Image (tube, rainbow, N blue to C red; front, side, top):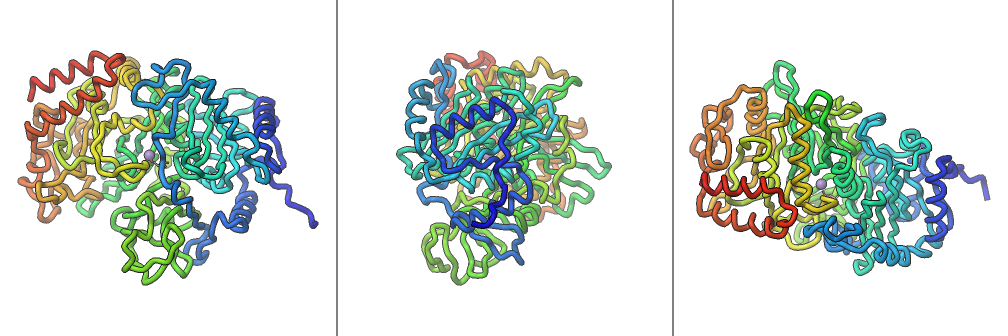
Amino acid sequence: MSSRPAFGSQASSNPHVRDWVRAMAELTQPDQVFWCDGSEAERDHLYAQAVAEGVLVRLNQEKLPGCYYHRSNSNDVARVEQCTFICTEQEEDAGPTNNWAEPKAMRAKLLALARGAMVGRTLYVIPYLMGPPGSPLAKVGYELTDSIYVVLNMRIMTRMGEIARLELGDSEHFNRGLHCLLDVDPTRRYICHFPQDNEIISLGSGYGGNVLLGKKCLALRIGSWLGRKEGWLAEHMLIMGVESPTGERTYVAAAFPSACGKTNFAMLIPPEHFAGWKIWTVGDDIAWMRPGPDGRLWAINPEAGYFGVAPGTNGKTNPNAIATISRDTIFTNVALKPDGTVWWEGHDDPAPSECTDWQGNPWTPESKDKAAHPNSRFTAPMTNNPALAREALSPEGVPISAIIFGGRRATTLPLVYQAFNWVHGVYLGATMGSETTAAAAGAVGQVRRDPMAMLPFCGYNMGRYFRHWLDVRRNLDNPPQIFQVNWFRKSSDGRYLWPGFGENMRVLKWIVDRCQGRAGARETPLGWVPRARDFDLEGLPGFGEANLDEAQSINIEEWRRELLLQDELFMRLYRHLPKEMIFQRELLVSRL
Ligand code: SAT
Ligand code: MN
């Protein structure tokens, strides 16, 4: 045999890492252990390897340089909440909104499944850093995986390799993550978190948030646990900078459930009417936020890439995303065209006369199934984004002036309103509801409570999580203003009441102006609401004051039902629900 490249042979010198990797390799029995360094040479080697193994297809390199294509198993296309567990000593620590398992028994079961699981395979060791190097919030994780697809996605989504090794040094404080594909059998699928040990074990899946352990598992579930312990917040929020024509930058964090347009909002291009305004993306999915020495709330994006929903992404809905995914991108479960490019429902190009669908079957516009899976995704480096904020790379992060909570609601919730104060804002987040989407396995379109868009991601008791939000306020002399939005309200005949997308800039401008003390509002039972004269409707053809009133209207009957739905959640959380939440409910009832 000719000389093999030395890729993957550089083991860590950190004794804690080495001991643990050795133990996991003894358990899983891989043919070889590959230590990732994150270099470009390594990247090229891994892509070639993934193509040779049939895990990835190299796309048309003239049209999509550096881009690859992947199909996941058709039983494995979204997060699976019923297979996701928080394993704490006490069930109460996981709380009533999480699946709980006793850690010893669960660990024994998982390790038995992982025994010998990598025979004939390669164990990849992925050191990764969440957050800019040197940030007070940055955390190091190690993921061990037998999926080369996971390695290549983690390479985009995190700061992977040498940079993480350097950040960790000889410390033993890193998240330990083990991932094995097994045979991708849903009956042997487990995504388990051991927050007390800062550990994750994920088995039997190869998709997205189940296996890119830095994302939902570390940055949100374990992160929220660490945040409570250490006095900071790990949130399912995008972060953006809103620049006014005078160059003033106001930073906003916004929580929306999965597949509700966070990526589009984070990359928004203001409509023509807003000449001189500019949106800068800091992050599109996750925010880590801590009270700074100046009494403001400072946020970083722990990630380095975007794992965005492909369908509906086009030059109108998100031109910055289109630029971002024009190179160096992995496409998963979209449709593959004969010319080696990709397509999805809602693409700029018309449906191809023929292509291969996300399951590998021939597809034509006459086919009754979708060409791309509704939860098909792109994985792209944030540095490709023309609107990337330079502060996304800053260890300190950005000071947050506004926090937005937004669900997907066809009724009840108005377009926008502002909370009266922090406690009221926490109540708005805590009572958020949203229609389910394709990002999680299960029925789509049912309203469920999704507090702060964290229902699938809070790594501990949700009641205590609300308490933690209230406690954080004590270290904030200058807390962000809190807002609620709903882009998805519909008329009784099913029309969207708000055009959405770039026009969301109008809502954002009111929010920013409120934070800067420039915009007026009217007090309503729900909160502060913009009057027509406070809200810029100019240059929005076909949308006038009457439309705004309709989008903002408060229907008492709908609110009666809404309160009953909120009560259901409060009853489940009762043991640890802060009294403040009950008081806020009572105040709302009396105002209504
Ligand atoms: O699959 S992921 O969990 O990473 C995407 C999402 O649901 O937000
Ligand atoms: Mn998300």
